[in-house]
Amino acid sequence: MLGVLLNLILGLSRVLLAMGRRRDMPPQVARINAAGTTPTLAVIVMGVVIGALVLVGDVKTTWSFSAFNVLLYYGITNLAALQLGQGERLFPRWIAWLGLVACCFLAFWVEPAIWLAGLGLLAVGLGWKFLANRLFSGG
Image 1 (spheres, rainbow, N blue to C red):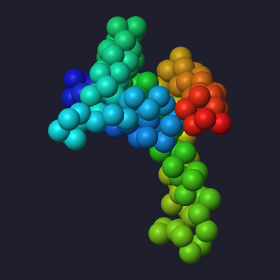
Image 2 (cartoon, one colour):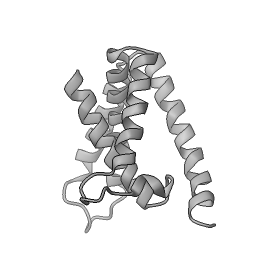
Image 3 (tube, rainbow, N blue to C red):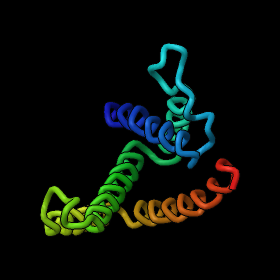
């Protein structure tokens, strides 16, 4: 479990870095250290967020929440793959459909409180996306 949590910190900090670069999050999280290797602020932010999740619940809750959200964004990726034109796709459409159905099926095997919180977080994220566009992109 500790390995999963450490991977979450590193992986999600890079997502936060990318979001800062795209102006979906404050641009300060897109800063890299002097050696050019680590988004220090993003790592610290994600470490605090993941630590808070562990303190609110337990490691199993944090892991379940993470698993739900990973399956959710893999499902969104499969949904995006369904939008590709025939010339853009590497695999047949049925593979994206299978992936989407499998992600939805597995995501909702966790406790209802977890997926309700995950869907709530998705709604907050969509609201933030619209707000961030106004705050960080000047428009």
